[in-house]
Length: 357
Figure 1: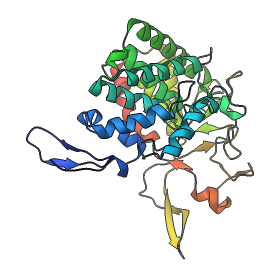
Figure 2: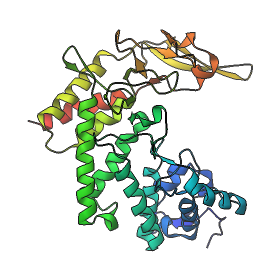
Figure 3: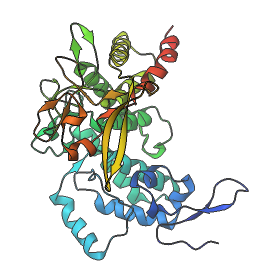
């Protein structure tokens, strides 16, 4: 038997396969939480990680974001986390809370430890409690002043939540232990409200359905500003997950079909061709540039102006610029201004459309 460290394990990849080491410590938290072999989630290493996840869970039920919960904690860090449980809020941003729910489900399924199920139930109730009456979800809950109260599509926040709820009410087995009649009914109701919110927030211009902003005002449902460089806009990135989610729905209503058709048309009309994003190194410094390339795959900007529908870029001063080269080094190289993700929608659309006939 191979010996491993605290966060490493040995497992068999398949019947008759060789034993391979998979040190969790060398992976991202999301990878450890959701992509390890299923049997790993019953190991001592997985249970050690689960103890951290329990510590990080806030009293409200959710978890913080951008936190490598699989990293070892000192006694002092553990004591501080216990204090923070009631002092700090939780978030649904950057895959937070939905990732921890998936991890706890996997560990509970393998171990049967009721503490993990209770933590999962608390996290699921957090999602139900955080939903607005209009069907959207904020970035933080309990609510935190500022743009954090906006309905959040950024980084697939709402899409991630809706996918968890869909797995529960469709009884896919991913969360089999949580698929009680009560949870199934609550998940279906919350999901339906979420889809209704998506349809109501879709930007309509000149009578035509388009795409979405990364965040929408929780009262007016209009496109809203987040950070200084994240202005109200058509989103070339965040809209992708929304459309793919809508395309997964069985027996889509005419309204959903119109929403998808409108978004696909917008993506087709706003693709950027003949250029690519290149990173160049000079004197130890890496810098992004746009270069001409007639063979480059289509790209889309992250933000498009709501009036002109042209791409724009912003520095921390919040002033729109027409090209990436016009903004400062820090934001130019520290943010994702372009994406190829809409191509996934365009590739899937013909098959989806044909399935409706």
